[in-house]
Length: 139
Image (cartoon, rainbow, N blue to C red; front, top):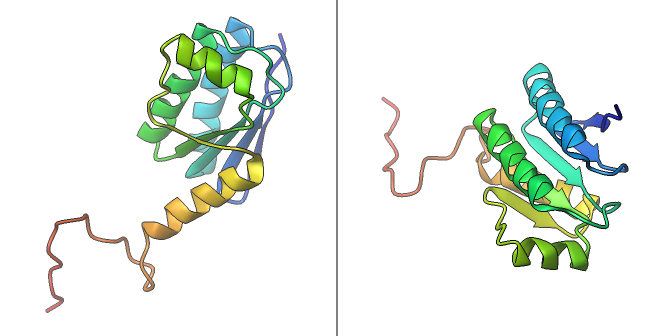
């Protein structure tokens, strides 16, 4: 069975799907990616689907599940390279892909993750307070 390679680039895992996403390959990717997130501690996942001509409902749901699993493991997911026909198919199938952000290409996807990471940290390197939560002054 073919496996989808998962590359580590800094704090991001890059998944470039270059093979047909048969159901078993999609399920294996889900498992492999979860293991790599835990093993590396990465906080971002970019999934490049530019080589996919077709995304069926199973693969669409699997992408949404991957994003949910990644979020639980403290990693944000961005899907990049979606072709117009794939986007149209997903909308027609009623798959909104909750929890998945999209970008036109890998470069923009990585920038999106970098901005999201930077917005969560202030100039002192401390995590920002939740919106609406009053800051507690230091004693």
